[in-house]
Length: 488
Ligand SMILES: *Cc1c(COP(=O)(O)O)cnc(C)c1O
Image (cartoon, rainbow, N blue to C red; front, side):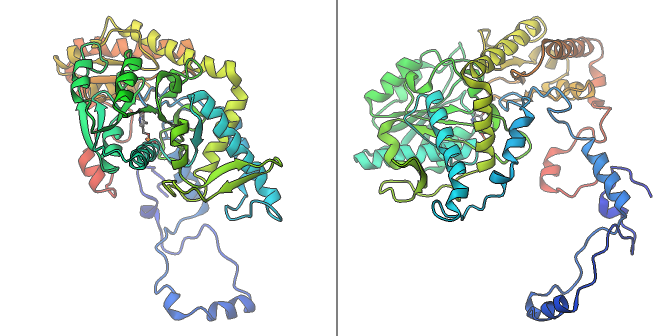
């Protein structure tokens, strides 16, 4: 049988071929089945491929070998933190005592003995993350970064409503992450965009002009999407607070600042972070994730329910009655497995280890920036944080665009960096090496990039056919989005 991986498993189907057979029903089971009302019975058999066990094994093994992952390749996808995460965190998350818990088990009495450990994990993780963020309390419930943003903005809206403030706008700098304006708009605010200045930070004059009494919050991505630290942050906080506007910290990329400073000390009132970037879960792959939200004391009454509390007798419980809470934003208590991995990671690394994360992430990004600077345009030439953003304008002038460089990297065994983001850089190539790559691997990547630059000078026309090592080359991305069932 042809097990070419480019065939769908349905196309390998041969009528009557079987990989496994189910045992015949016992008379008791058959009698039971007869009692199922007709309306619940399927009218035709399920459309499953008819294949042998070997067909299935080959098909999925071959497919899995096409996976591009951190476990197989360097993956410098800017803004996504595709770093290597210790396997022990996965192992801990899979322990029976955690993975087998049912979310409806009682908190105390009976099954309560089973849930106390899980509640303790939630409580302790909240406390550790609150300390790292410099916040007074944390909610682990949001299930993604953007979900954390929406939760955070809902908290801000609840705060203003409670004070009788009539605020209608949220300021978002143009170098912030694209989800920020979307979250503010979804929460019902008018989004006011403020441009970046020539240094890549928010243009202060434009900010001051936009900051009026109607502004509920300023959402800052820090470091911003150019990988730069917002230098005027104290001034921004001062101006915002003078208007009773709150400062929101998009800390999805906390591996840039981890253990170096507390965002709360910089003047931020609300933060979200991405556990599925910085804390032991990868961002790519479509989830699950967790986007915990931290707040200063004034916003604690509005936190989503449920809230984990520690009682005087040392037991833990979930509280559901909070008069001013914004209510439920996720079922049960968010993505517990992701939170548990983060907890394991925090304990594994400890204070020194977490500090080393950001030091190495920033060092690796600056190393790449310096080594590639002679070869690419660098629109904002400052010390960067955890990622650096080049502009392939020089190469594009010869017909080799950022997307072509990305495709050329695939042939050399590297996942491409993020391209065409952030939008403020035209031919953006955003490289996030992360803290887990060795110098040898960084050097191999740098050498590949330089080789591609040389090839772009010598033979730009060759790039149109790249990649040549993959079963699919250039996709019609619009068609792929709209018609998922396409043949490769
Ligand atoms: C990744 C990211 C987000 C969004 O996180 P999701 O979990 O993908 O919703 C928000 N802000 C920044 C700065 C990010 O890098």
